[in-house]
Amino acid sequence: MWSWHRPLMLFCAVMAALSVIFLPLVVLDPRTLDGLPIWVKPLKFAVSFALYSFTWAWLLSLRHRAGRVSRWMGTLLVVTGTIEVVLITFQAARGRHSHFNVATPFDRAVFIAMGVTIGLLLVANLVAAILVIVERQADRVGTWAVRLGLVVSSLGLASGSLMVTGVPGQNWAENLAGAHTVGLPDGGPGLPLLGWSTVGGDLRVAHFVGMHALQLLPLLAMLLAALSARWTALRDEDVRARLVIVAGLAYGGLFLLVLWQALRGLPLIAPDALTLAALGALAVATLGGVAAALRQKQDLTAR
Image 1 (cartoon, rainbow, N blue to C red):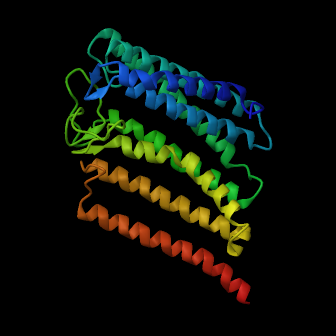
Image 2 (tube, one colour; image 1 turned 30 degrees about the vertical axis):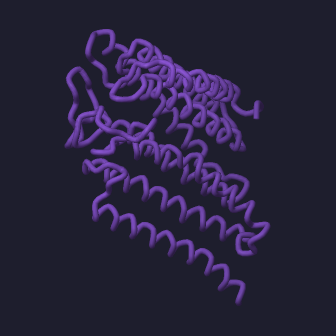
Image 3 (tube, one colour; image 1 turned 45 degrees about the vertical axis):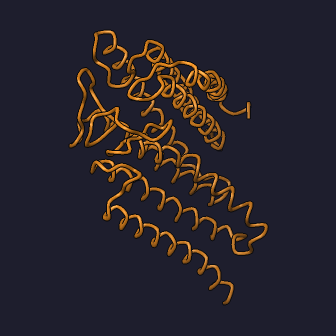
């Protein structure tokens, strides 16, 4: 693994180490912010960046023609991610908001710096994603898993920008230039550790769901390959590729569904009838796609 993109792997190791440091601070430091321990946000970002950088190091290693541009984009991801975590940690140590905070000139400068770094990260992510997407991987299954994972994860990453655009229903608190919650001010009741609102819509849900397509779809491809040793139908590469495509489309649909739910001011754990109907339709369509993928193999075998 150390032969992969070295800066990304080093960044992954540092973020993993920081996660170990932040975890006891969540318990030991009694200070809270918006109802959560102040070290929860640095912990979540450290864990997220550890997974993110590890996945990108792996993705860049898959390129058959690894070029200078892709290496520089990976390094830019490290630089911007490092600045982001440093600023989040610094503000947490001060007991201050890191995101959206414009209470003082210094806090505003920190927030602007975070905005610039996340903008550069989005650009680097997009360029690196395009470079990987245009290349074919070793097999069709891996190719589709990587491509769909990159598309959905890029949309999930970009959805974070909605938190500062003032979407209908957002209530920005005084001295804050953005919010996670739709329909209510930030800081209300939320899920343990995650902090996602249990009384209003929360844009962080779609942000989280979308970003982790980058890990889950390639993992699904690996799982299908492992199961092919015991399940005859999965030994056909075309079948596994179709199943990955179905899963990718379904996951993209789930991302859009939870985003739509949040934008209507509905908490994840309390969907309305319309949301449940859309979820049911997505489930039926997914099961139909899986059945069609498997049936096509059975039809070809029968012939």
